[in-house]
Length: 493
Image (tube, rainbow, N blue to C red; front, side, top):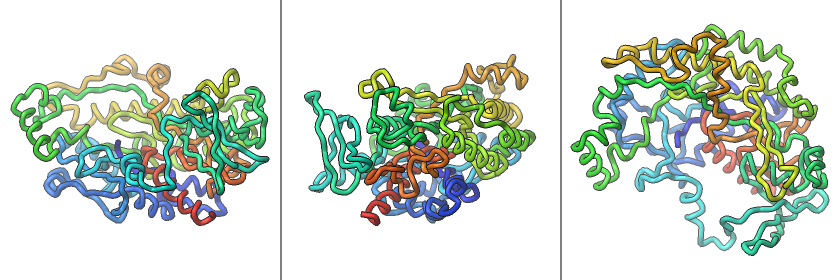
């Protein structure tokens, strides 16, 4: 998994701060950096590899004591060189020295990989497995929680399903910490009687706390299936395909891996990409698109029965997003493959009214409901073409780049806009936002201490609390939130 911190905690664009103007420093970049560092240990790349590919790291952005490790593979294919050169040929694209800096640009990124074991490093094998002997630490695997138990509006425990198909309870002496993720956290809150009253009424669940934002504000990164191949990269040897066509190279790679787990088998794909601002993606149109977002009737792009507080929160977010569209330091798209990092639409995750306890929640992405989102995706496809056909990649090797989707016959903005819905995958498996840390009057669900509004002794500590999506992957920001949540919980115990 790749790592980057171009996120809601970025230096010049702290949208959490905009939504909490009275106490914004608590979740600023400066405040969060120690928790990012606490949550992850950096291992720099081997010196020879760093010199060959000009990979730089800045240890001031990274930790040294976390059991979760991040490192670089011991090998990179030489075909990455022309990709880096192509990025540098386009206007507005910066080369960033370290992916931990929280800035937009092109950089080498780490992977969640233990540099000794050469296996994925993550919460299970880095935290849980190291503490199995603790008498106060128990994990009930494959055990589904049914709901949080409330006495009045105080969380007193949880109810869960047993192996025999019954229901059992666990009581708490202090508080319940919920980390079920952006899909199941809102489900559990709603099943517990905390959420939008009309949703709970439809499912026959008694409303204990009418909290309209629960399950709303749903966001995810999305993929647009533009596809352009670069035949010239295959002419640069060695490359990944040589593992299947060059017996000597494969044997060399196998021997290295067997001897010390180095070489080509240590890499999944090249560790460089661009996390780009809208100012670089469309220098000619970013200002006009930002103006359109600022002046539109934003409520028109939400469901007609959306609660007023949720509508106000969406308006506040879009106001901040319009500012970000003009910034050279907020990530809107990941390259080389085109992934939208700042969605303009907001969906929902609600319990199934027909079978609230037995069925999965109803997930509605509401993708492309805001027209600015489609317009930005069109600009992303145009930039994607520019990257391949208007840089040195166009003359790399004997054959030119080959576009298979959307294809050479899809040319105008109107044609591209019509193609976008047919090619969009609404998820990059980074769901967030459904228990947002925003003021309650803006549809928020938790406050800045992660306590659920209107409920005592209940906090949420997963990606559902993000009011807006990070411009990078959600894993490390979630680790950072968890580390900060631990300090908050201990300080208020």
